[in-house]
Amino acid sequence: MKGQLHIHTTASDGKLTPQEAADRYAGLGFDFIAFTDHDHLLKPNYHKLIAAVKTNLLVFDGIELTVCTRWGYVHVSQISGDKEELYIFNHPADYGLSIKEVLQCIDDVLQKYPVDAVEITHMGFSTPEFNSDLIPYPKVATDDSHNSLACGRAWIEVDGKRDKDSILSKIKQGRFKCGYTKGDTRSIKIV
Image (cartoon, rainbow, N blue to C red; front, side, top):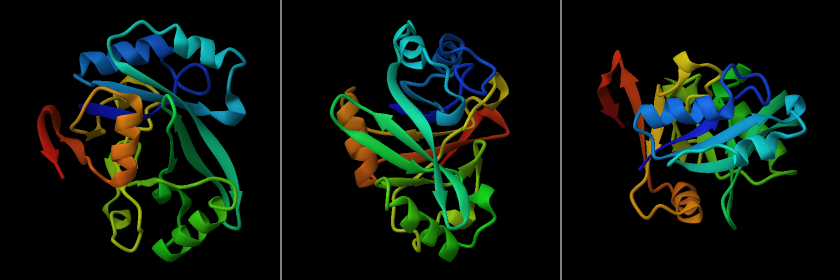
């Protein structure tokens, strides 16, 4: 199953409604998506907007948390399954930190939230410097999409049953592959 774990909509600072984003990802051949709108920009009816989406995709409800660390504010996606929750340390390349400083930043986050995975993309583009064994977490590729052009640049692929908790569990265990478009969406490189 092909999945996207970082999508913003008009429920915060995105340009697509939740329904439009789901339709876009369905059209790109995705099987599951996670809406992760910003906590500090969230519209009061966010969860109702997500629940109202009509799609065959498996839809995860999530939120991008803003967490204060010694290095400033960072983002962590909290994605909810039926019982499981997944926490992803988002876009370390945005913070201008070394790997050592990112690890210290993650230690600060761990005072408030668990960390289950780390993004190795910036707006859907690979940031290979953070795909390092020095960062002891599964590495996920995401779009962090805010508009239709940013949809489908990066994703994860998970084998298994179509079940929210099973997917989140496999991500925590690192049992998935990352994928990226290279040029046009018909030539795909899986890493």
